[in-house]
Image (cartoon, rainbow, N blue to C red):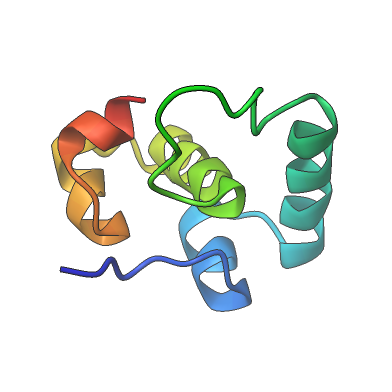
Length: 81
């Protein structure tokens, strides 16, 4: 099952309250601070942009991890990562 939310203008602005430009700047800062990590071990299920979107949606909406999981097409365990 694929998720509904993607790091696209409509979804970012609707679910995070951030303008897309602000989200892009946030993503750039996370990337520069090593947001993708050393890439050792198991690969991420979601790309960095969608992981940042997931965290922003989590903080803005206060949805549970079980509620966020189907929006992104991943398991609740993946949301916990």
